[in-house]
Image (cartoon, rainbow, N blue to C red):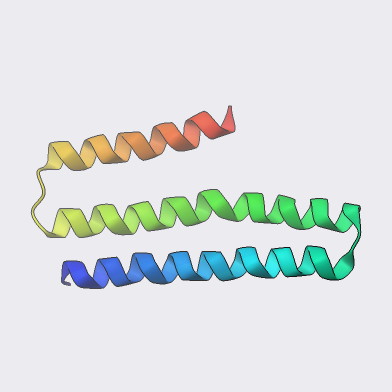
Length: 89
């Protein structure tokens, strides 16, 4: 698989993420209720880390396929883990 395929996958995931965010904003506007807006926002908050993890894993897989040194991939992976850990504490 070429690196172009990994990039297209990352772009597609981010476009899906953007459409989920726009849909959430539209639903908040549509319902015009604070309790519903908080619920929708909570669901969107769950989707964020999943999207981040998915795109980063795809990017790391693409880097691994293009012969980037393992040490650099490990540093990138460690950075992703620290971001996820830092946002949950």
